[in-house]
Image (cartoon, rainbow, N blue to C red; front, side):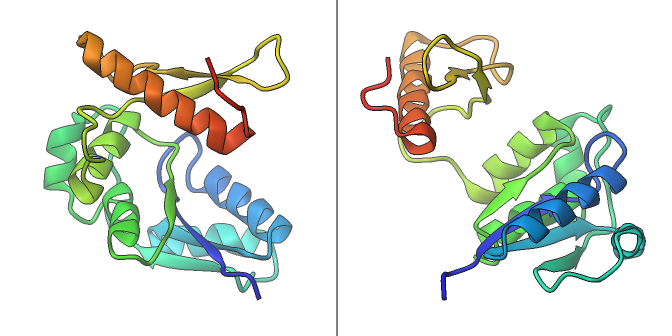
Length: 179
């Protein structure tokens, strides 16, 4: 059979977590049988939310994490202080080869710092950038980088963001030679 895609999900981050995050994970797990969802967070809270959805799905697992980083916390300090926070533990799943990617809806700053410290940087990429899709007049959406991680960039860093945007456009939408 096809190899499962394993996604670590920060169950404790974002608005109305863990309820909304677990709800989304259940919908995804039902729709894609080749997906394995690793819900990272307080096991009792996550278990209680899963119970609200009835039958336990085989492709959802719980990974315990005892701490949560709040939206109001300074990301770098919080990441270093809270080693067992859901975002740090979710990132560690990828670093240890137990997950293929991470989904997090909590503090973007904390997610970026966790990724940088836990996974490192891509060779020759100076800074991480936040990408988002925007509607466009063409057939595919427009990808915009950087939408908030950096305030002072060199021309070379802006070029790097452009190259990353090209790669993401090609990979996600099959766009040939994105401009």
